[in-house]
Length: 216
Image (cartoon, rainbow, N blue to C red; front, side, top):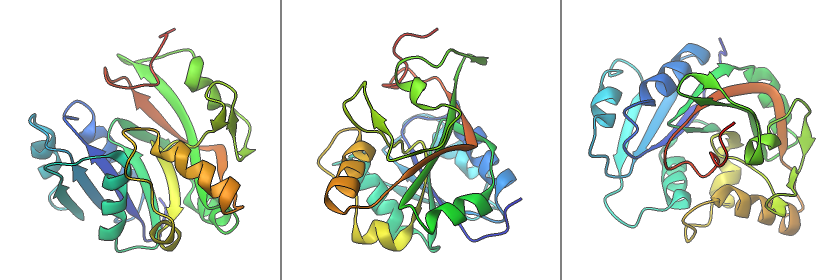
């Protein structure tokens, strides 16, 4: 288990099916992590399930209106107590983690995101379409031929807090805030980000997920 101070931002909106798996995987893989839940007005059992982990260091903040992915992460960053930040999807479960490797990469790269295995009703599915980006080779400044832009993914991505405060996510976009941030990072700031398969999550199917086109 990684012995390091880390804050984990998890954005939620009606995530009762998977949020428990996500939180438990954080507890299993990190030593006393600070978990910041940014909830977008969930009406299901999401927050009740979060409350089951009440003995752990979990803080919940609610967004009642004007939600956007960028705003929710920026809010989460402002609430984090630690310099090392993980942005984790509420429907992702960490299955392979080496925080010392991540920390070493963050000394050079401004963001480090890991492998994702798509899971549909318990079954691992073929990595097609956007899932094909999550391969077995590390890539600096990954470029997506599918999207025709840089590809960074906030379902499982590590950052330095001070850098995010100085370079927040754009709050006007309704999605893909990570891609727009990557474009600015590389083209304007002349910095780098890294994809590495050395860390990994299971990414569970959700009906609203934009990456689930063409289940195979």
